[in-house]
Image (cartoon, rainbow, N blue to C red; front, side, top):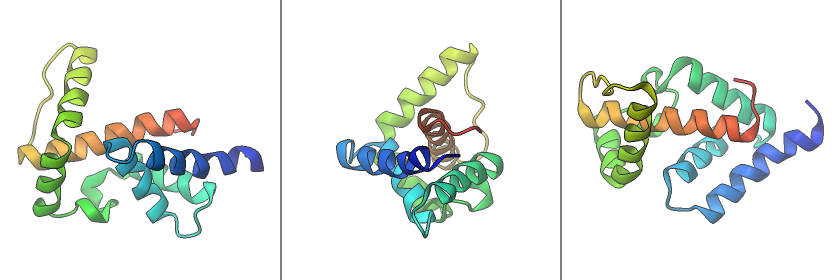
Length: 126
């Protein structure tokens, strides 16, 4: 990976946080930067690879480990989450099979789906 592309991951995440500050996408971008202690593109790539391999259920996202956290997240980003759910169901042609606690499941689904889309946007090979 060349240096100019590496720099672009961090810069793009910072741009998203600045320009789309109240969105779910900005929340995910911010979590990627918080996770990346050195705030470099190798750390950012590691964040997305780990998250998309292990999922939120693994505790990868420390801000979304407890029901109180996931319920608050769900309430805050409800409209974004519902749009993601609708688009996902439309693409697979059937309802999303919700397992366990609704707010917890949908929070993790939305975070992981947004992270996947963001990884693709960044050009990460996931």
